[in-house]
Image 1: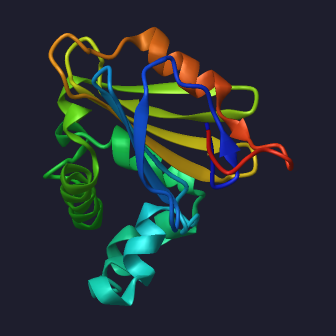
Image 2: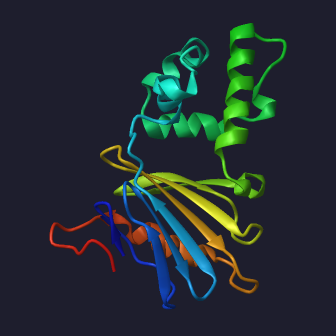
Length: 190
């Protein structure tokens, strides 16, 4: 498959339907029951920075709470978000830290997919690193947050829609290991 300047292999040989393909998002629905949404996010500055800078969200005041987090890389912002837990928020510590922790937990509850309850895993390859939100053995959805060495961020959401079409970790790994910038002569989509 090749979309938005990236190419990757999918482990399913079934026919599929593609929806979208404009802007930076495409959804692929395979006849075998799996679905994949690929998003080459337009804003590469990171979730916290995007929230603070997006005027339509009216969240500029969060800059005070998030502080230097908005100056970090998109990968570092995601790492902070996913590593924040209720246990890491200290009610009797400095008030600013407690408010920041509670805010991060709220953002995490809104932004992270439903697979969050089944686990968050990090991965690192020579050309990319990121996070897998969801355990395919326990969830029908797995979200991949992938950051290449140049700092570019893509999201891949994987679903198993039909009973018996459960995702496997080896399928997820195939998509991850094959993901790379598309060659200049690659077709728009396969």
